[in-house]
Length: 124
Image 1 (cartoon, one colour):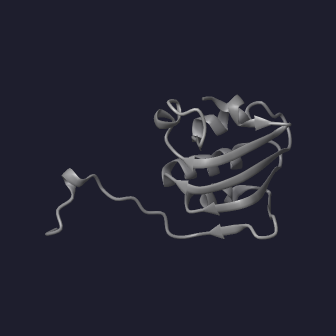
Image 2: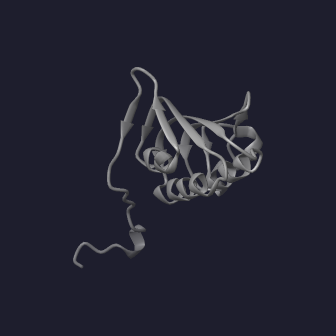
């Protein structure tokens, strides 16, 4: 999968999990990565609409997408149609405009990840 896979009818569609590109490249759908979003944004010189329906995923990828939105030269309008939770709520925060459809859901929380189990010791 690449950034072109996210473009439909002149909009960027972000549906599924926010995952590192190494995971998404083996899936046919159901996820997107910061790399894919950057590639999709590069296809637009100006303003762009981004439609989001995602429960989230990697906070690191979410932050990288947020930064990509912020760096885009045109205005970004995000339309949440369904859910923008966790990393998906983080990634939309630098959009110029955020709209939500009736019945959609936005869930914001402190981003966290668990340390690798081989480095985690409950005694410390």
